[in-house]
Length: 322
Image (cartoon, rainbow, N blue to C red; front, side):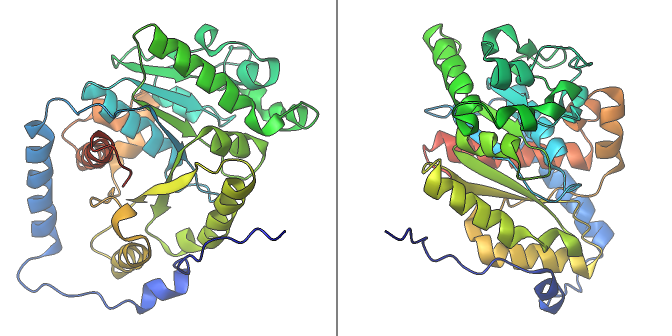
């Protein structure tokens, strides 16, 4: 019996980003427009002290097969922004480099118990998670370099694709039963489609794709979407792409504007309205073991991530995805 996939629009390509006509605005300079946007973001960030809780735990997979597009940066800053606005958040660091753990000031040296013990040895997540010392309401399941060998070890294990899902659902259920329900789970994936990423996509319900506003970012996007379709068809029918976030946006360049317009034309309402700009503060924050929203809360990067988190939370409070 054939397994037909639903017709999907052709994913954007790098070539089309150059052919998109960008409307000009002669009434303001890029600097003036950026200043106006910054003031607007500050007003919106201060207008809401708490986000509404979703009616169920939303589990996001932050994924893109291309490296360097801002997966980890997006994971930690969206998680931090949601937690700072009063929500209960769990970050699962599924990348053996452990960069999400670093940015949230969570110890993850070799031998530190974490996600490896959960998916390979079957240890209960309650014994492995650690609270973020800088942000109330934010909990982290760390990754150590031990996770690098998990891809090989998982091959011989029973139900190897769903081990994270079983561990996570058990932990979420026990937390909810004890009156400590999580509102959001964000799973930071490595830049590949190995067994770790497959585990993440089986455990997730929504996919958040960060897309860098540069030429190479659109290369391989079609393959990522096809892989997500395969996982939905064979392993997790509940998985959906619900959120697209434009990262490393530079409004002064025609290419960034072209990529952004091309992505919006294909993914429509799934694209977060506010792109994440190129920002020195975003790059600096991990070296201080912080997210940018705690490192410099008034920077353009922090305000943009707060606005992106607000859009995600608004969709969740309405009981619907983006």
